[in-house]
Length: 283
Length: 189
Figure 1 (cartoon, rainbow over the protein chains, first blue to last red):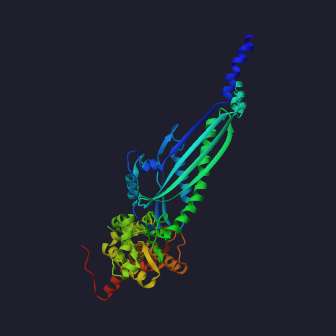
Figure 2 (tube, each protein chain N blue to C red):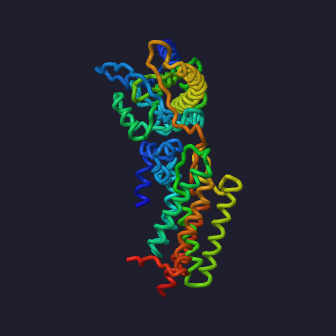
Figure 3 (cartoon, chains in turn orange, purple):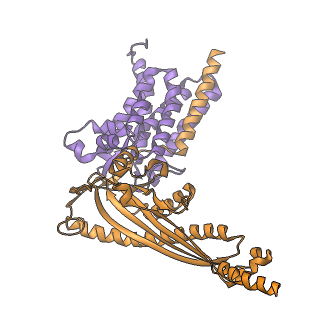
C-alpha cells in the first residue's frame, strides 16, 4: 500500500512539472528614451531637410526586462548594420552611422540626440525599439527528465519567440517624427532541458535578424511613401509640420581629387629615394 | 600647416562651407577655388591625400622649402584653372590630390635632376615617367587603376592630377630656365 500511496502522491507533482511554463520579456522604447517621466512633449517645428541625408541609427535603451538585456552589444551592432546596409547607397541617403549603445543614455531625451548629432555630424536619427517575448512550456515528454538521461536527450521543452522591432525616423533639429515602420517575426522550436537556455538564446538571435529583415522591407515602403508626401510640403498631410527640402547633392557632378594606392606608393618611393640621396650627400 | 588646416577642414560642416561649388565661385566666392582643395569627402580620402603630401612634400621641403611651397602653390593654381575651364560639368569638388601629385612630380623631377648618384637620378627619372604615365592613363580612362578612396557617387576628376603634375614640373624647371637667362631667385634664408 505504502509504495502505491507514494506513487499516487508523486504523480500530481510530476504532472505539474510536466505542465510548467516560463516566460521572459524584454522591451526598449523610443518614447521613453525621448520623453523620460516628467518631461513634457515638445511641439514639432517645421522641418528643413538637407539632402543627401546624414543618418544615425541606434537602439533605444532598454525600458524594462525580466532579466538582463537579451541583446549583447555585438548583436545590437550586427542588427543595426543589417538594417543600415538595406539603405546605404539609396538616394537620398548620404551616410548612415551605426551608434554604439554606450553613446545613448537611458532617458537622455532630445538633448542626448543633440549630442549625438554634434558628435557624429548627422541630421536624422533612426531609433530602434523592440518588444521581445519568449515562452517556454514543458510538454508531457518532459516526464522523461526523471530518468536524468531524459533531460539530455528528450526534447520536452516547447519554445516560442515573438519579436517586434520598430524604427522611428526623427529629424533631430525640429524634434519631428518623419515616418516609422515595424518588423515582426515569430519562431518556435523544442529543446531538451539541458539545452533549453542555449536554444532560447539562439532563437532570440534568429528572431531579431528575421524581424530586422522584415523591418527593412517595411521601412523601404515607408520611406517611399514619405518621399511622395514630402513633395506636397508636409510630413504627413495637412496639420503636420511643413517640410522644406534643400539639396546639397550636386545637380551637376560631384568630383574629387583623391590620391589612391598608386599615388601613395609612388610618393613613398620618391621619399625613400630622396632619403637615400640625402644620406649619400652626407657621407 | 597644410596638414593641420586640412584636418580641421575635414569636420563636416566646415567642409560644406568651403568646398568648391561652381555656382558660388562664379558668383564671386573665388576663394573656393583654393579652399576646395583642402577639404575631402571622407576620412579615407583625407588620409590618402595628406599621406601622399607628407611623404613627397616632406622630403621636398628638406631639399628646398622654396621648391616645396612653389610646387604646392603652382599645383593648386593650375588645379583651380583646370576645374574652372576644363570641367564646367563639375558642380562640387573636394580633394588635395592635385597638390599631392604636384609635390610628388616635383620631388621625382628634382631627384632626377640633382640626385647625387647615377642610379638615384635614374630612379627619379623612372618615377617621374611613371607619374606622368599614370596621370595620362587616368585622363584617358577617367578612373584610377589601383584602389582609390573616393566615396560612392563621387567621380575622379583626372584633369586635376594632370594640372598638379604640370605645377610640379613648372616649380622645378622655371627657376632653371630663368637661371640660364641670368635671373636667379633670392637665396633661401
